[in-house]
Length: 365
Ligand SMILES: NC(=O)c1ccc[n+]([C@@H]2O[C@H](COP(=O)([O-])OP(=O)(O)OC[C@H]3O[C@@H](n4cnc5c(N)ncnc54)[C@H](O)[C@@H]3O)[C@@H](O)[C@H]2O)c1
Ligand SMILES: N[C@@H](CCO)C(=O)O
Image (cartoon, protein in one colour):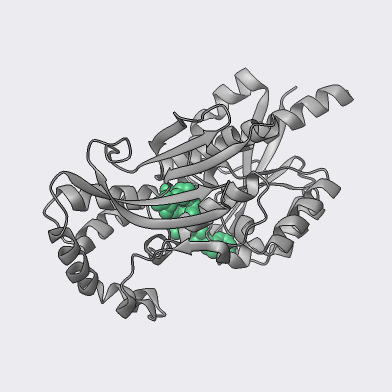
């Protein structure tokens, strides 16, 4: 008999809604080939939740609008208990700091978590370590491949190398899909910087607050996640981060006020573009030098002919230099942002847990 996996989805924006589409489209095949039924009995955004015991269907948006109601996290937990839903995988497709506060309680309930949200992995080291203790104590799983490079297998690759005793020397590259797209487009086309930003937002490459990308924070978080993955005891404050936001716009509190001043960004980047030669492109890179223990993110000019200079669209490219990949790095490259690749990465993370739960069931039977 198939094993039912109950996905509780928080965040139904770009990534979350694409995940629903992918789950509904692939469920029959997954059921046939892998013996797993993926159901989504609960979906929620920041204010509203919608419950359907046997899982949402293609008309979920209308259902959510009509039958959604204001909720608290305890309502969700109570519903799961009342309906006796098992094999719970919480999916965090938000960018919310507030939501992360519930992670420990979820693990304590025996729920597993798959997250695209980078916050939990980039809070203080104390929190990071205590979260891992909670996960272990409750025999739960925590997958977050999409934290770095969207659907690209970066964390998995690094973990495999690291687990097998391989010494990692350096990790370097373009970590941000949105910044890759922004600088590719801005370097090549006669568009205002603000027009390129809007296009990146419309394509779903940016964070809900674009300043997370422009400030370099999003890249810094990715770098920190990789550093911690290979055992480095680092904090976000250990990273030298170059912001792409001119100082005159840095103190603005509200996103709407920031958006009203985008013409200042236009002036700043038009001036910068004039200074660039035709055979170079801007690249925003991150670098983790394990041997020196330094982490930095910065804007550089790369020759168009270099590997990083040749990136297209929203591609990310991560180079891993290690004991076995000393001179020529191991390179992972491909779309580094976008709802389809990210949702597919989340689905892969869900299936990894689901397969373990299924194996456990077979062993127990
Ligand atoms: N867009 C990408 O290419 C990409 C790639 C990798 C990772 N991610 C990550 O995926 C996450 C979602 O990105 P997105 O582009 O879908 O954002 P989005 O703004 O389109 O959607 C965010 C959703 O989260 C909901 N939300 C906010 N706070 C919440 C809360 N406290 N509880 C429940 N729901 C809450 C919002 O209502 C909205 O439905 C982010 O953490 C982002 O970093 C995105
Ligand atoms: N805003 C992020 C999404 C992927 O984490 C990026 O541009 O890379």
